[in-house]
Image 1 (cartoon, rainbow, N blue to C red):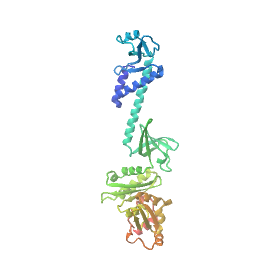
Image 2 (image 1 turned 120 degrees about the vertical axis):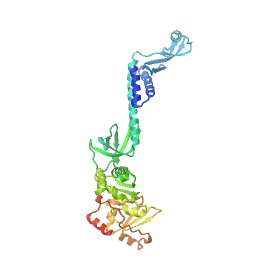
Image 3 (image 1 turned 180 degrees about the vertical axis):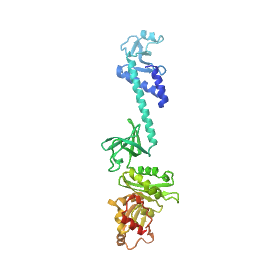
Image 4 (image 1 turned 180 degrees about the horizontal axis):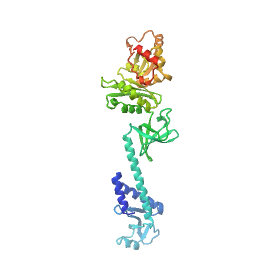
Length: 383
């Protein structure tokens, strides 16, 4: 090795930020390992690397004695005094034993160490970069698909989208450009693993932040999200400014804002719900697009009994119970839905003073396409 190596180490320190001392120590350690691997371990040796010149020498520790039995560990007094004139019997001295071909091995070893350190530094930088971006949306291209796991090219690294993080029935093709949400970054011996998702509820939250300036600016808040990716979602919003309608802000002019999000999610239906501090009104709103006649709540058990018109019962429950399930998840309450006739049969008392008339309170984003034309007209008549 030569001065060129030392210069290269200095350049790496400046350009990549890897301290020269770290590289030198790694090279020393690797050279010791390389010597023992190629020339045996019986000798008590150490490899010295000159940080100024790049020169490499191997030294063996030997005991000074009169009669040598093992030349690998011992040296005669005469030979020892040629090197160290003042040495005495029983002293331990260092004798250079650098093999003639060790320079080539040392050069290869140093090169491997530098490459490895550069890789480690690159991995560390990537890990730190994406750790800071955890919780953000990234855009990449589908690089490969192994089984049901999709790997997304992010530039210097790749994102991993597991089957559980994919939108149901969504198909991915090589080279396809997609957006995803970074929900976890792990550091492993082989480099950082960046897990991304298109099914995560917060992916929906970030999309609204990108599309709705009022949310990005903090004027409109997203209070909660309930999502069944690829099928339907409910999102509750609240405005800190009484002059701004939170639902209207999210829907956008002619429904463009919400439609952009629906398109990104492959047609996933989105109900935008107005949040209310009164849990009864909030629960009624959450059952959109169904109309609600009354809500009776049981605070201690977090249970709400909801009364809907007979003809709206199936709409309130939804296909396979989806609407009721999402509404319950959105508000954090257990929701028991009854039609007006069912409730009347069960009890002659119709909630008394606890009754809350919420007809007309439910906010409906017409862009969702949840109402049939007849249901929309009926709902308008009830208002």
